[in-house]
Length: 362
Image 1 (cartoon, rainbow, N blue to C red):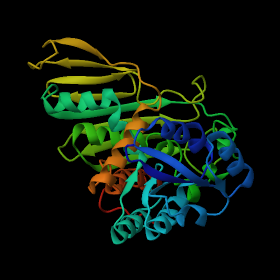
Image 2: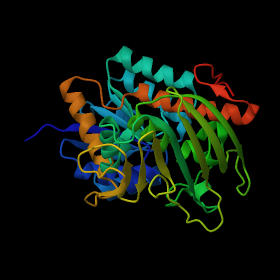
Image 3: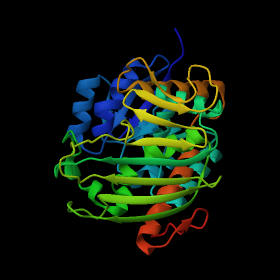
């Protein structure tokens, strides 16, 4: 029998119930063996659905001798304290996005995992395993668009009032999504963190300066429901972003990073546009599979919604077994978090913020 990485789940609410549990059932080299949630009825329903023992006691996961790693799916401000406890218990750590709500907390988790000799990974990096994302990175490395000039991201959703107290499933009634302290931010932090990582990964360019404006227009929360950003990349390229969770006429979930108007990359020799499960690519250069001077549509086999997450868990397990760094270490999560916090600082001060100079004690 092939070896499996044995996970304990901390937090059994929406994402654990609607995604993680189903993904781990399909993952060849990983499995979940125990879970915990502070709410007894949530723990009981998870146990009944997925057939693993679940309790309200954190020690049942951290002290379990067969647990190799934990997946932390809790309100955002709890990711780091729980991750540090898990690391000190000798467990490898995966945290849902974002890995933390402050850079100080992110650094504390990274340090704790290094000191304990365990791996740490932040789950927004799973988008790198989407076929379109992987192909876009390959095309850029082949010179299909020349030098990066700009990126464009836009998208709008219309989250119902119930989302802010129960997510999309209503599984757990809570108010943490409304709280700046507990969530760290609104639509940018909760939803568009994936796009920041995706474009950092694809282009190989880091964001060095951010200017943002945001507001809360139609939602009774402390966090933003509409935000616009202008970015500068390390190579001088530009970026523009617009994101909303309160746009009338949009669907409740919206379309993020999937349609032609959402993720677009401009280069000196071409463009790459994300279009549902396909890429639209224009190039002036000679690149295999593309016709110079024309648009080419590249389609990919339809994958399940959980495909990228499954590969993510498989690759994390392989990293543990091989004793190497994971593909997406928490240092990557920290880099993305720094951009988000710079955007929030900019929106508060109405001034551009240079990364590396972010006072995240806001």
